[in-house]
Image 1 (cartoon, rainbow, N blue to C red):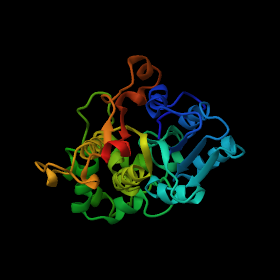
Image 2: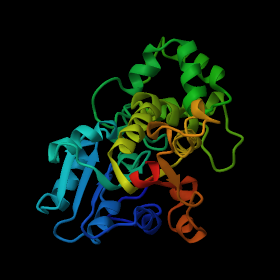
Image 3: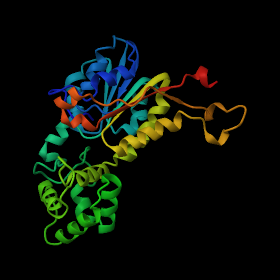
Amino acid sequence: MSPVSAEVHAPVLLVEAVAALNVRASGVYMDATFGRGGHAGAILEKLIADGRLLCLDRDSLAVSEARVRFGSDARVSIFLSSFSALGACADQVRPGLQFDGILFDLGVSSPQLDDAERGFSFMQDGPLDMRMSGTGRSAADVVNGFSETDLVRIFREFGEERYAPRIARAIVADRVSAPFERTLQLSEMIARVAPSRERNKHPATRVFQALRIHVNDELGELQLGLDAALQRLRPHGRLAVISFHSLEDRIVKRFLRRHSLADPVYAGLPEIPVHAQPKLRIVGKSIVPDEAEISRNPRARSARLRVAERIGLELAA
């Protein structure tokens, strides 16, 4: 989700993302990560009465915002759902519904990040939660219940944290006498045992990212969501994905590349079966915010937009 709420700033890469979808006035589109509706609103401005927009979010507060803003618009369908279930949501509107464009805006939104009670921020004190849906295992459950080995794995795999062993060891030692329940309790401990050498980056940044990704299974959800989106794109439909860190972007880049090539099993054969032919065409190079946008919104500095188009059936035949 965009690091900026619609009420304060335009979402990251707003113009670029909507342009990438190549919106048709009577088309069918999905904003798979509603956030606070900045992208959704911009898409709706381009749709006429018979156009359609499906909005998804796994955060009930975001869905409430969607219903306030767009609930009375007959063109809009709103779902409380992770984007891995986008196919099931689409079927509720019409079985087998396909799309002219699907947008993913990954990560954590400003309302989530700025609300201390959600537990995403290492700069504000709040419960160590981080659950986007509000259900399941919290960050506190992970920090207090996982073994040192598992914590090291999470911090390395999802945060690329070089001091993962040192931080995990300190957590396991400290939680014996005082379980970690608050965000500042954890972030201050991390700053004490593993001071950052990265300019303008808090020492707890990578650990908090890792915990958030693990708690919400963000990378697993992304892969499932991309797979589901590919199945639902019409010929010439566009897939646009905004990512905010290298782990997300790597998955997106590899997914687009894999589906833009023929199945290597059939390499060298004079004819390649339709099911093994490329399904996507990568559209242009990845897009990043310009200096003006980064100046307005420093949280946009790591954003990257990748775009691909579903290859038409007439090309795959």
